[in-house]
Length: 255
Ligand code: NDP
Image (cartoon, rainbow, N blue to C red; front, side):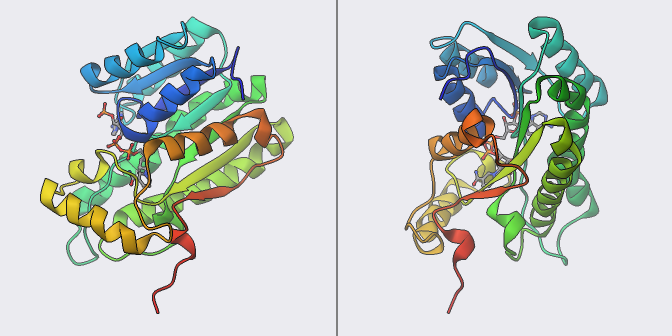
């Protein structure tokens, strides 16, 4: 799998799945545009990618801010003159049920996970049509299956799946593919940033031995490999797919 000559934009590249995907694609010779807000963390990912590829553009940006979204696309085109792949990995989680989720939490989750993804994608579309490129969105097993007490997050990921399929059908005739990966629990900063303390997170990972058929939580590299496959020419006849990367979790039913 080579991405030589391909320009790939990754949101959420400063941490977790986005960072691992950047490093994975750098090793396949991709030219990368890496987006995040945390400059120090994003720079570490840039430095790591630069060991494999010379072409890395770092853009510090908040995907929820319109001016930043415009700056991301303008920066990409002015540096590389084209865009082949968009990977929407920026995302947040917060727990809460219908009884406990505040409307502010709901708005924040939808702002990052849905609205910003919609807007960034929209701005990229003319450039992706020009290259007959493709999009990979980070959904979740939470988009496919229903888990109580992560209500707004589950809803946001279902929206990502519907977005993925509609965009895939709308752009198929223009040669643009659009797919999602749907990870199970993957060891990253996501859950701790969403409010879990260290002890609760360790218990959560232990519980994953039961909730994932393969008996464990996943690693970022396992998701990066699936994203790279969908983004590559090896997936040239695959569009409108939600690919579980979840150790079989989506197929499990308690009994
Ligand atoms: P991390 O918390 O490790 O990384 C999240 C990334 O999103 C960071 O790079 C962060 O950048 C970025 N981000 C968040 N908000 C914004 C914003 N407003 N503007 C710009 N960047 C932003 O999480 P993961 O890597 O685990 O999550 C990546 C994606 O995978 C998410 O969409 C998540 O929902 C999904 N996912 C994760 C699973 C898991 O178990 N980890 C399971 C299923 C899906 P910065 O810190 O620089 O602001």
